[in-house]
Length: 138
Image (cartoon, rainbow, N blue to C red; front, side):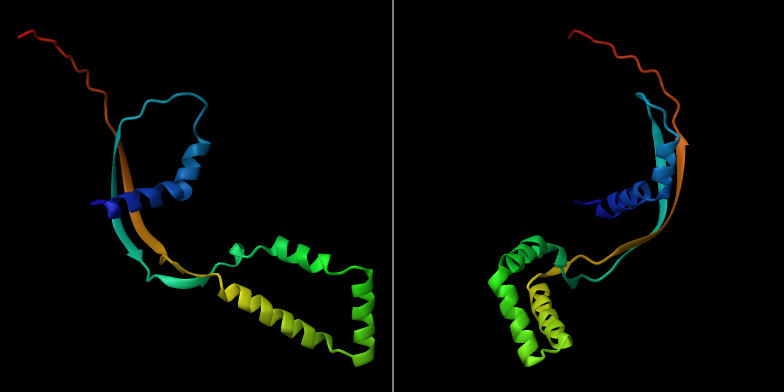
């Protein structure tokens, strides 16, 4: 795409508060539009970076699996083990956190850098120009 910078500038302008504010002023119906838009400013594109995509972890499935392991005998066994060994809750939490961190590591993904802008715009209405088309037989 040759004009990626311009398309990004338009996209950013539409997605900002001005786009939302303008929508609030529109009435229901079909509205003709003919305008020129002038956008001027800068676009800054950040470096790509790696990010853990924790939303890709199936937390519901993981929780369901853990809960499925807790039948009556298992619960009694866990309580007995806890009472017999005096297991420190913080140790269990630490082990669980290590497992969760390992799950998060598996979701590492390259993410595009942030795009920030400093843009000004003007919108100029264009008056309709009547055009006449003639069909000529040759």
